[in-house]
Length: 141
Image 1 (cartoon, rainbow, N blue to C red):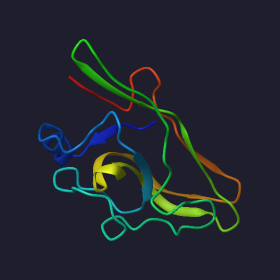
Image 2 (spheres, one colour):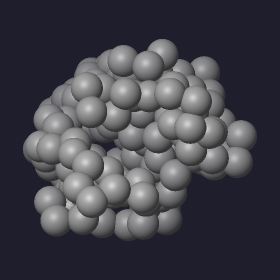
Image 3 (cartoon, rainbow, N blue to C red):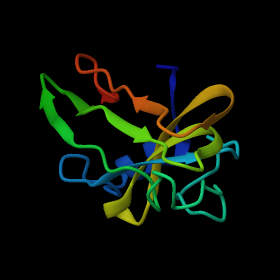
């Protein structure tokens, strides 16, 4: 998977107890609009127009399963299970960015992935959010 970029506001919000990373409900949303890591604060379809909630894409994106969210020796690690977007007739897209946000904390953004160019999934094609089971999506030390 491409590199994960943390939103600056996410780091600030964590320091102010704005996220409970252990019990959070995370969402993975698709958009073709470039995020601004330095200033974006929340996910919404005005800032990040998403593909239509149809053809295999759910409004707000997928809800990945939290495999673990633990702290060991002073390091917190969030591990998410892989999540698959599967297009049906009509396809999904275009999108270039995959945004991870915390839906249980007023849709505050966490980070995003940039695929480098726009993607459109045709009927039966898939995109797998391939979360790293060893290093996690993010670590905080």
